[in-house]
Image (cartoon, rainbow, N blue to C red; front, side):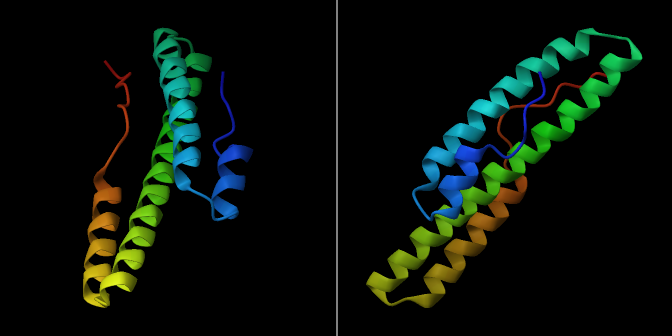
Length: 116
């Protein structure tokens, strides 16, 4: 089953400025479901199965990107809060840069290679 990438819960949580952890948790649940669907779709060797596999792979990548963005935003928010307490803008900039570089390379779960 293919679900919408941006859940309304995640979007509402992120747009309201509330804690990103609930939005991340919702996206992680979507990610697990999409990975299970991908495992099943990979077993189908028909053209429709291959197309579904491609769509699910793209969906997983989009969810992973959303999670990374939310994590980077949370890290940036924490860094700004910390810099506000300590008065160090350089520390906040460094923490933000580190969070962004981690988010570019972090992945949650794995993508199944169906081209065996």
